[in-house]
Picture 1 (tube, helix red, strand yellow):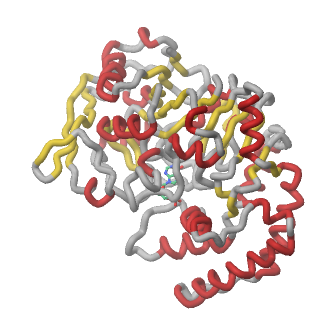
Picture 2 (tube, helix red, strand yellow; picture 1 turned 45 degrees about the horizontal axis):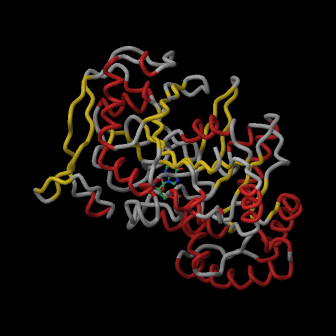
Picture 3 (cartoon, helix red, strand yellow; picture 1 turned 90 degrees about the vertical axis):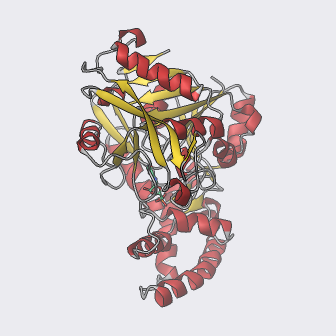
Length: 422
Ligand code: IMP
């Protein structure tokens, strides 16, 4: 492995954490490239469960250098809480490296996200972690970055400037209390002390690692269909979870990506608002939700569940250039007599196999299904593809032939060993 990217192929929550954890065994550096503390990765190993929001889950491997790259937005309170929780579980967080160019999610970002979401009209169902407002400030060039923490005078001046605008918005638009620069500065300087030794020129660190032939694993957060440009806009996040986002977020050039892996569930889930053609509102949806423990790591919200949408998965494969697919949670589908997979949409009376990324148009698409026979056996003890029930093997083969990408990894349970490789 030289540079390997792990990308969510659906609307996030594809169990990327487990796949990243497996690949991290062969990596020297594991890098988060986009998103912020809206992400939630769970890794179960050696009887312990670890929860990640910002820190790359590769930190569980003592030989790995975990890096939060410049494309990530960092809520310092969330980072501190996560690092403290990992430390109490015996994980050494001193190896963590953080890009100087990473933007800060500050208390007013979170507040604005919450206030915007409180207005029913136009609600997106965000995680309320301040992600949209942080990336908005980044694009407006008024954001603060990790580098600003190292220069208190510059930090205060930039904070003062942005607070004038943000306080006006908080007070006049939402009738909320303004925030005080002194209070925020005191908090930022506390964090500056804590993280000073961790801050690095991340692109330089990664480029040097590449030149030295070290193996780099890029850990995606969220999923392709939540991408700001290629997802179901406006029901998207504000970053670029797609493989190209790994280049933007780290500085690693596109021609250095060796292996792009898409991670997809054997069915589909979505949290928050937005169109979801294969959503199930019946007992099959409930069955999947309970067997798959489909409740959010970050917000605890029950996830919307539905059949596998192959139109969307094929789109994800094309946008990302997947070399291989990892299919997760295949075990969840055991016990269903018949499985449906969406192979086309009906839009305005026409059949199409093209994904429709525009959120409003996708809401008008009806799924067209093919039915495949299910299987009754539990899969959690299967360790070889040919040991899966025949109908489960056929299900995986159907995915491969429709999407045109080989399935090289199948997950049949949360534990590391509950994995079929090859
Ligand atoms: P935001 O990223 O908090 O702004 O939320 C925008 C949309 O992305 C909402 O529909 C969220 O539910 C969704 N979202 C953000 N992060 C994740 C994730 O890690 N998994 C699944 N959905 C997410």
